[in-house]
Length: 355
Image (cartoon, rainbow, N blue to C red; front, side):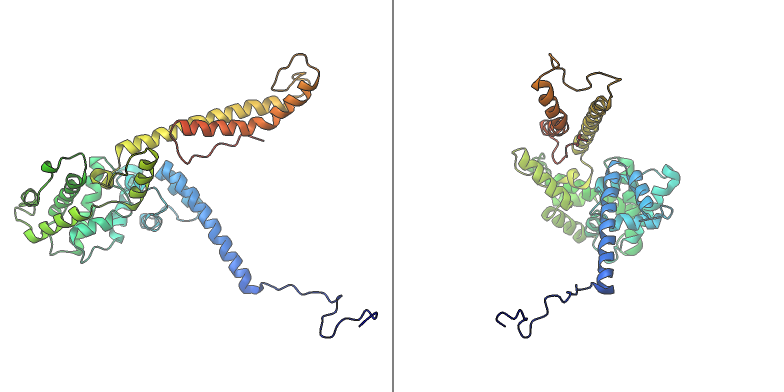
């Protein structure tokens, strides 16, 4: 009302305290779930980084985070399968292919548990291989390949007893399929020298205790491998990005580059890792020297600044040294980024040296 200072009809009094909406117990539960998932993701990212450096270190860190106990091979095998898209697949293959005596046979037990978890019942042989290789990349060492594929052949024959008379035949055909893929899809092989369908049939004659596999089965495998090579989606994406960066068309995923660890890529990766470690050590040593000099007191050095200026008086001493004290850390990080680019290391972050 005019001049009365009264509040309009239907409006809440101005001095009435407002009531903030409460999340309630359900909202609090959502917050806990979110925090738990966030923590799990952060831990998993750390596990993946350590696993890429060393599978043993990665598993040990997963144990530290409480993801696994580290004592049950079946538990570790399930962990590798569950997180196959987060962990480096080359390292998974290397871990599964380790010698039977390595770590008291634990990795070998993980391999057997890993294969036993997978289901191949009713699958045609080459599709079973595709399914098997979705979770890791086969290492390049012959003995590791033997151990991995021998266990696969044994498991496939157990679930499909009518296909092969013994696991040895499945083992031989598996290797023959890998050779076929390399032969058909490696661009370095001339067209006239590629494996033909009759040649593939002859190559696999009598592999089951002297008995031939059905020709229809062999020809169907040939046709499927020719139409669609076995590869990993991560390989296709990474090679496309790398080829674009080098100004070359992306190569197709073929042969040993799809099935086995690429020796050249592995060398590049290790070279990049060694360079990164060396660079970070240099930055840390330099930062340590700078910080130590900055902490020195008057008794250690009457002029503890990083910059020596003569004469020791005037605005140069007062301002230039202050600016250097502020900028040396970011500048060092910027230089490290330039070094990364010059050595062809993509995606690496500069080491912050300030503080």
